[in-house]
Image 1 (cartoon, rainbow, N blue to C red):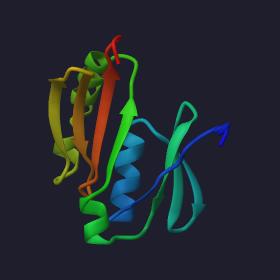
Image 2: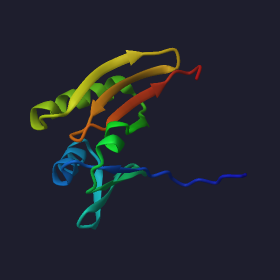
Image 3: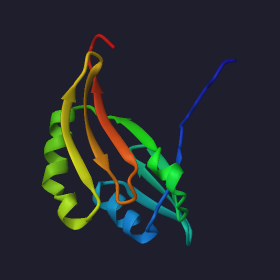
Image 4: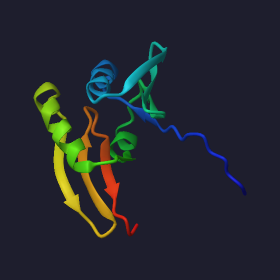
Length: 123
C-alpha cells in the first residue's frame, strides 16, 4: 500500500475540558473550536483533537510523542512556563538520554503522557 499522508491527528480526551484547553494554549498550541465540546490544537501544521470525553482507562494509557528540533531549548522554554504551578496535576520530567535520542516528559491535566523528543543522527 502506498501512503501519501498529509497529517495524522490523534483524538485525546480530557477530564476537565476547559482546564485542558487552557493548558494546551499555554503550551503554545493554537486552538480551533470545532464544537462546544471539541477543539483542534495545532503547532506548525501538526496537531490533535481534544474532546470533552473522559474514560479513565483510555486517558491513563494515552501517550503522544512529538519530535522537536532542539529538546534542550524546548525543556528550558517548558520550565519557564511554570505549568505545574498553574495546573495542580501537571508533572514535568527532565530530559533523559537513550540510544535513539533524548526526550522530556509532560503529564497533562488529565494524565496523558506527552514525550517531547529529539532523535540522534544515528536513528
